[in-house]
Length: 45
Image 1: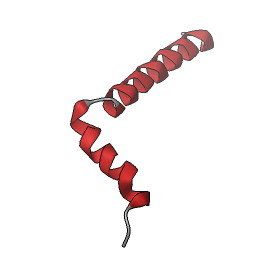
Image 2 (image 1 turned 135 degrees about the horizontal axis):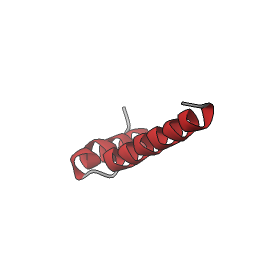
Image 3 (image 1 turned 90 degrees about the vertical axis):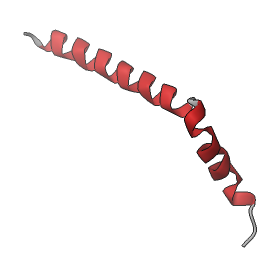
Image 4 (image 1 turned 90 degrees about the horizontal axis):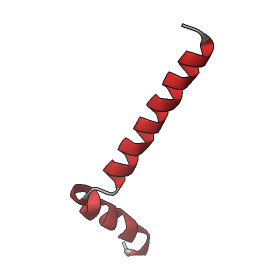
């Protein structure tokens, strides 16, 4: 196994992690938490 194969595997792994993060961020299950976090700066004490 040479360095180019390792680079290819690392690139594919990073891309899959990126897709997983995007799927997590856009999932409906997390929408309420993200909406609440988005309103935090505007709430008064």
